[in-house]
Image 1 (spheres, rainbow, N blue to C red):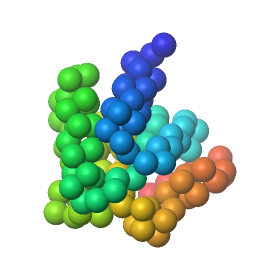
Image 2: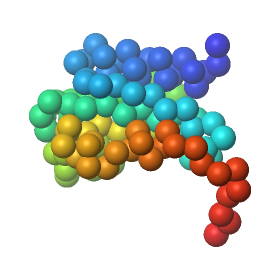
Image 3: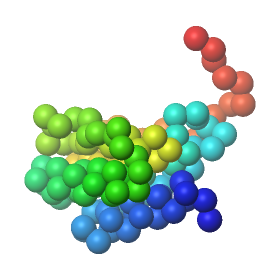
Image 4: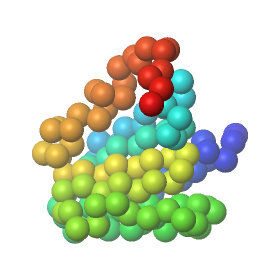
Length: 116
């Protein structure tokens, strides 16, 4: 097993043991260079979403990802924790449905990349 795959499993286990809902993992290999995996989960309330994001952040730090932080600290609807190779989005169910990240990232992306 490689370190990124192990980290992904640790984050999924953390989310699951802390009662996150509808945990989905998206493999970003050959889709994007921003990360290897994206994990999307839902929380039941703004407090639950905050607690989940803090638990994920702590797991990243324990596993050597020192410079990560929580984006969306002021929002009760969503959080993003960037663990470099593993990105975690935690939403309330309404916002998650609105943004449809699973649909956007699961669709095939053309092999041609746009260069900016």
